[in-house]
Length: 283
Image 1 (spheres, rainbow, N blue to C red):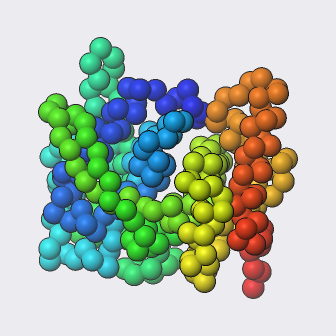
Image 2 (image 1 turned 135 degrees about the horizontal axis):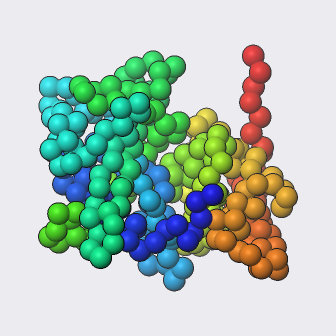
């Protein structure tokens, strides 16, 4: 299990350094790129008294309705020139080795993601633009219509300080996509990310629910929220447990308090929106 103690300063800083470099490398079409995945809470709530742990990898969503071959420089060649290694079996994955002074190198994983609609058929797991494949992610299309611009300042992998601005998924697509992936895999941090956003959203569960109201006619939004409900349907379900597991709460009383808090906070948010448990239709 990957838990909070795995999110060390050297790993987090290496990942930030690669993110900084990626925005520079993809600058020509960064307006058609949105950061998604586990880094989002750090950028949505940068001034929190309880800082989010960040992420150990980078998920970039590419908008294939805007990125055309005639204006698109091959990402693969750009990455390779900078020392990125493409996974041969999963071509949407790249790895960037970052040398950390005083310790060994850190390998940062980068995943190129795409929406389900447009490009190749829905049954195919990857979208193709020139030489690069990007994996389809359910709910990813929402990120292109609901993003915010943030800034990041730091040091590049090869040295030198820099500052960049780029798009990240807003709270609606982030929680929807987290619901999708949490439903399909066993990764404790997914539950932690969801709980963190609900707890730290300015104005609490009611204000967060208000943000979602105008999106409730979108079936993807409902699906993502219903899948969150399925994992937090009771205090005994895996959602609340995963939050405590990720935070490595060993003391029984502390675990019970966190599990109850996670269940109650997420339930309050979903109850306001009258979200039911996900039920897959059998045709």
